[in-house]
Image (cartoon, rainbow, N blue to C red):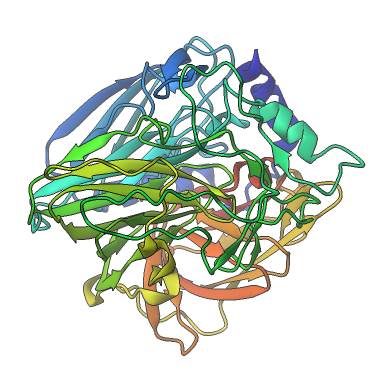
Length: 531
């Protein structure tokens, strides 16, 4: 089965990791326990059960067989408050090992859900994750095994702060690119990406011809102009056929293939043209609808769970006020659209107008989109391919946002640097950090309490969303002033970014590109605490 193949490929991709340079295991264990004890503890316990399994899922017409946490995608929402203890029992009903990584949570190292910190859960066995949640925000969970992340194994995870209640309604919007069960499997796609003598053309996960619902989305990335509906909504928003910041002409990219180009992403937009792009598990022809009242303040929590796709999102007829990045508050900033890379999360506030409005997630540079609907009154939505003018106006990118003062991490220590040099072999589709694939990685080292500068350096021709487990870091702007706090950051081609890290969560943590295929091909390293 596909899942079994993924498990086997993971061993080949990752190989054996080098021994920790972290001194005594007893010291490490004691430090992890002390860090957990120092976190806030509310005395409340939140329990949940997850069952990774083969499931049949309705995407709004197409019926797919995939891996999922139960019988829905996204999986069941998990919700807690600051200081709660989370107790989640995972019953692995797959035929290969799996895990659950709690993305963005500053949790105890042995509950991270990624090897080597946490062993994978063998097929047919159970495991219980148990940890406290110290910070509010929008998070998510997914496996860290093989290519399983490019299936339906993901779910939203929200940690509430009772003081952040200045809104009337909440809308959780989960973005995804979809191939499993309708196009080529993730394993087939990876085989094509790594094939010798592959053509300099897009790798496409072909749309099936047996769908029970037709779709206007296109899987060809060689078209230079998208077809756009001129049907108006009750908001009287206009549409645009092609964004000025995006070209969709297929050109060779850093991996030898590319599905298009995007100025916002610095060039190549990705490696795979997916059959479908989803919001909350639905194709554009069968969108979910969020109902609200005119004038209500709606907190939208965006989560990009995609494997190879950055999304540019906009709500027709509305501007958005960005309030949080990756869980942490920023100085409120008004935008018309947002660029959201793989694994990033943004929270925004919108004031609902009267009518029916499409929420559109443009697959950046890929000439396709996902959508959902906001309904506050009478009206009909436009055609599924409609692109609101907001997509081409003020597009929010990470450089625009600044963390509020209470969550600033302060200045880094001088002469203390963690280099993260991103590299790749375009022909062989092998990706590296600091010159080595993960199977040969030389880990980065920190001591507890240090405040190093992370230097993200990307000389490649593709963008890379880089994620560090167990920590957040604060971006430093060009003038050295503090930026947003992040756990995942888009590093554009030929770009060098600096961030400050506070080493306050001991353990062995992985850092990797959150393009699933780049990570699987070796773009991962470790951050090891030493004693």
